[in-house]
Length: 172
Image 1 (tube, rainbow, N blue to C red):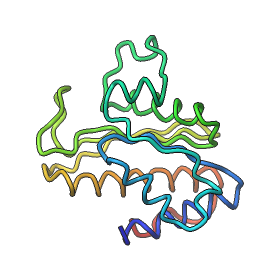
Image 2: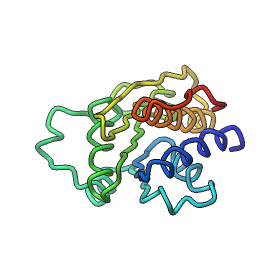
Image 3: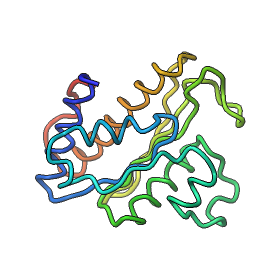
Image 4: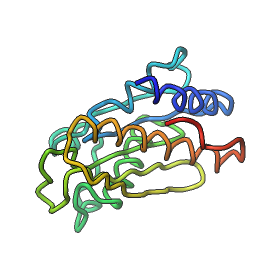
């Protein structure tokens, strides 16, 4: 987790500096994104909520996404990640919503995605950004760490874009 800590500290610094907050919805990262952000002392100043949304019942309970919004949208896709980022942000009143959804492995998911596939979205004051990461490996634990690193780097890059400060090129 040490290699994630520097990025998390920079994220915390930017959020605190601008009086902003974040909420996280993650699935295949299994809570590592939230744990990393919470490992920074003073996390209560910027971290509002995090949930491992691994199943449909969890999504319904934690995100309460309108079923009509889900029509034609499959899990582990960028449109789904955007819906989750918006839902977690709005549900708890955070400035930023961050989501990750994918297939850690060792096998793929029921939607045809190979292991090592994840989609990440961040929703903030300036809009939404989403992207897909394909690691090309089937090692579940390694993918979880890679998904977490990449998810945090996406959030950091969005914060830098929003505030025009520094460079998102720190160690991740």
